Image (tube, rainbow over all chains, first blue to last red; front, side, top):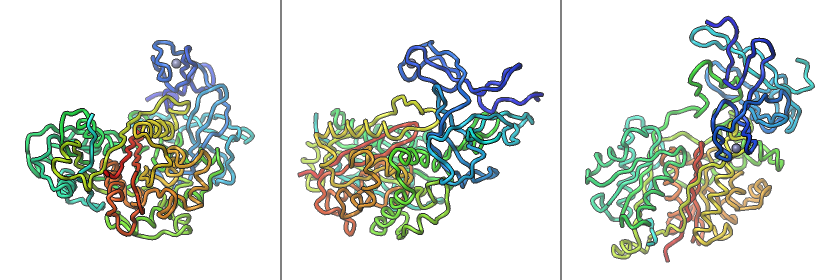
Amino acid sequence: MSDSPLPAVDYLKIPDDGDPYLEGYKCSSCEAIFLGERANCSKCGERDQMEAVTLANSGTLYAYSIVHRSFPGIDVPYISAIVDLDGGGTVKGNLINVDPEPEKIEFGMPIEVVYDDALGRKDGEGNSYLSYFFQPSNAAS
Amino acid sequence: MTDAYVVGVDMIKFGRFPDKTVPQIGAEATHLALDDSGLTIQDMEALYCGNLGQASGMVGQRILQEIGQTGIPVVNVSNACATGATAFREAWASVKAGLYDLVIAVGVEQMGRGLLGGAGGSKGISKEGLLGSGTMPSVFAEAGMEHARNYGTTFEQFAKVSVKNHHHSTMNAKAMYQIETPLETVMNAEMISYPNTKLMCSVNVDGSAAAVIASEKKAKELGLMSRAVKIRASILTSDPWQERDLVMPDVNTCTRRAAAAAYEMAGLGAEDIDLVELHDCFATAEILHYENLGLCDDGEAGRMIDDGEVALGGKVPVNVSGGLLSKGHPLGATGIANIYEVSTHLRGEAGQRQVEGARIGLTHVIGLGSACGIHILEKAS
Ligand SMILES: [Zn+2]
């Protein structure tokens, strides 16, 4: 079992000596950004031109749904959000610190990415995980 | 190249058949379509079978083991919710290419209940409810909210799609449900993923549908032209790269490309289409496809549902069968069931729900991942 939390997804990086961040892979030929390490670009077809880039911790809300029914054991309702990060890259995650009501959610609202324990979820070996969440950038964290 | 015609087509009444096997369910539609054409399995030169749940299970051969092992070539296809349309297209292509004069396409599915998608995550911890939602109702809710973002489409407008399609299904004995659902009922049903309530999600059902396709020469030789339906276009696309691909499946671009290619192949435009069976897996999705298929201009879909243009009796009726929302959505069968519905109208045999004077119809399915299949059909003159 690991002493420190593991990343919930492989594009969440946890440096030994710094803050966690989201990592994209950018095609140096066409500038398309992907999540997760890869060798080839599926936008332009270029090979071996992918470079790791640090994605921004700020962005805007592109679209969302409010999930009222999910699988057993998952707390509902919650907001499933699609966020366009400043500087490129689109990620999906839970939007927190907003009431799950359509009237409280605005398209284009400024969002910040925050990092926290993965809702207490552990794997079969008992490892804890670190995940990322979205919240309105004016919210107190 | 020869023209290809549907000379026999049918579907079973969709429902739940836990005591039957997948090949048994598929065999029923195969028999129905053969009977509709007046031909037998011995007349078929090849069989194309669409099924998702047992994609590695040789379902097409097992259907022949139910109804007649004639030794013909069998191709089993799997292409998400475009599976049935893909099997139909492969059958069409084999006739167009001159390989065969008489073939049959079958689509069949036996579904579980409950939510589709989202359960995945091979290692570590489950991501559902941690990194948003991957369930199908959520994915299509988000696609609908993109439309709301762009054009101000409302929850009520999305809900009206379900009111319409459930109303249509009251005239279709082969639909899973025949129940009117007024607007308040749809909007007040259990919220699954806003803005999709339970009555705005397609129904998981078991079902099968089949179509016999003939070359022009063979259709004439057998005297089958009077009820034949000409396949004017068959198009399949996959999804081109999109900026938000990784987190937001794009159901729009591959549909738009398929529609443009289908209209070009048929030498027709959207204004020539008399009825449409499109992929209303969720009420939100149907709204997007009015624009994707060119039935209206971008941003006009909300008005189109408000004005009743897509209801039976309207300018271009959409999903008069009841659609996936009420007829049901047995994934592998859906694409061929759509062909059955449109063909039935072109033959003037749709009874109470008949689209009057229908000459040309369009079917559309989309499978996430993605695959879009469009067919344009015309009454043979
Ligand atoms: Zn590239």
